[in-house]
Length: 203
Image (cartoon, rainbow, N blue to C red):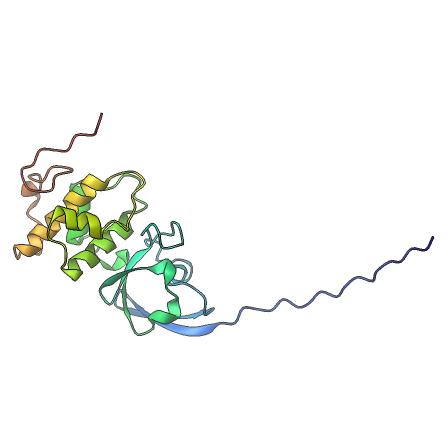
């Protein structure tokens, strides 16, 4: 019986992924990256710029955790290629406020305890800012509908709603900043209008 031994195959050289230079204007600053053309905006933010406030959830545009603002409009950054956003004004949660000067939505989320684990919170806040920029929501039902693309697996929806409604009400009344700290308590957790009793969890 004859035995045939096949000679080892030569390994093909590993081809490096092609890259190109992309300049993104993020939170008021230009960043030039050398990235593959198929790199999503989400991965560019997290993996190349260390802007990890934008979260990767489903990576399919179904949860809203990766929401950022592009030219003032909210988008799912996991569904957009970074190269598509050259020349656009990109704003992430890191660009909305600072520790010393929180954005009104950030302060409202704290005051209303509008988060639990916090993973979806950056996307919720960016989406809420996009909603305010659109100017289409006026009622509680409209806010719920237009924020429905942002999921909260912890179920903090009543408190998220009350936080957004407070800022929306303040903006409509011409007050861009939140009320002083001593007045914020008039908005109870889960409330959708001032002086409303706290929303009790279902038994």
